Amino acid sequence: MGKLIDENGIRLDGRRWDELRPIKIEIGVIKNADGSAYIEFGKNKIIAAVYGPREAHPKHLALPDKAIVRCRYHMAPFSTEERKSPQPSRREIEISLVLRRAMESVIFLEEYPRSIIDVFVEVLQSDGGSRCASITAVSAALADSGISMKDLIVGCAVGKIDGQIVLDLNDLEDKEGEGDMPVAYMPNLDKIVLLQFDGIFSEEEFKKAIDLAILGNKKVYEILKKALIEKYFGTVDEK
Amino acid sequence: MWHGSDIVMVLVRTKVLPGELLHDSYQGQPPPYTYKLGSKLFSLKVGLVEIEGKEVKLIPLAGPYIPRVNDFVIGKIIDFDAFSWDVDINSIYTAHLPAQDVFGRDFSPQTHSLTSQFKVGDILAAKIVSYDRTKDPILTVRDHGLGKIINGEPIKLSPSKIPRLIGKKGSMAKIIESKTKTKLIIGQNGVIIVQGPSEGIVLASKAIRLIEEKAHLPSLTNMINDLLTKESG
Figure 1 (cartoon, rainbow over the protein chains, first blue to last red):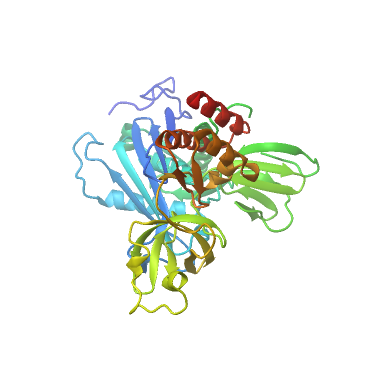
Figure 2: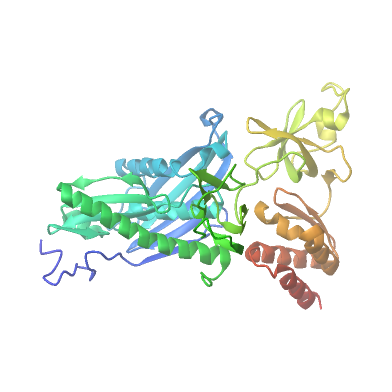
């Protein structure tokens, strides 16, 4: 394997260490859903849809004092280079779980007792960092549905390639690099709601990685904000 | 966003997103659609906020319908059992219409047939008599203007935008009704029944779609007026 960063500090896709891939967010793409969003995060193409809060079926799932969240993260069979079996894999089940936990920390569940909020995430094309892109799309969809939430969530990964901490790994950097750390973040409350880590970092590297992740997340937040304002208020003027 | 507690500012309807700081040191209970962390007040929804000194008012632009007692709603019968009908009121919870409300105190499942009054699929106007977090809403049809709706076209609008459709003292609804020669039955739950000639219904639904898109703009009444005069003229 060749070098992932050249002598000028440029990565394989032409980015510097602290640059994000291009991001595009569209809100309200699915008419039948109560809230929906589509995100392009580098080569990731992901649709998120929120249904509810609605009556829980089967009824025994419902809790008397708050809503429950059900999340399905799924990769389309055509989303990867080799065909992926449509059956939920171990990885997809795990991501569904971590997305759900991140959402539960941000939604005001007590406002909707005895109900269920269904969240579906469909990956149409996958690249590195799809769980971070997914969580950004989900929070956009939740805001679109008008469910009470404490803050928006944005996600962005950091990693280590060629011994250097870099922002937002793509698929190749994720596979060939030395570490990958997805971080989801509430920008207004300054809280981390998801943090996973694969690889080996020293303590300094870890601290640097967290700071970089938060910096990247704030950039994603600006894009998400812009998309929401555009959908709800037409233009992004006067601010 | 608004910072600094020592300056008294009058802001006219600022755009807010969930999690945005509305007030640095807010006293008392948080107003609807906001929450407090310490003394800071944050938004819970996408919407418009009016801040006048200590008063904070948030108008959401999306959100599910949460039933409230005395709300006028339009629902659809989805099921029934021996004692009540289940009514879909476009909310999180299914509402119930007790048979006693329709047949009176001496209702008995042996002598009265529920389907003689309402069948599955019927649309009805009703009022919410009771609701709280622990119980599903209960409806009544025993009041003026309530009961089965026989004709008209149902149109849905986001429940948080219903106040814009009605307008100040019903002005917006009146404009639409007079310009399109239709009658609007507006449920607080986001369901509207438009009655009248079919051209009028088409026009009224266009106006309602415009309200859905432009509910955040202050010049909405003029836009509706322009649309209706242009299309009907």
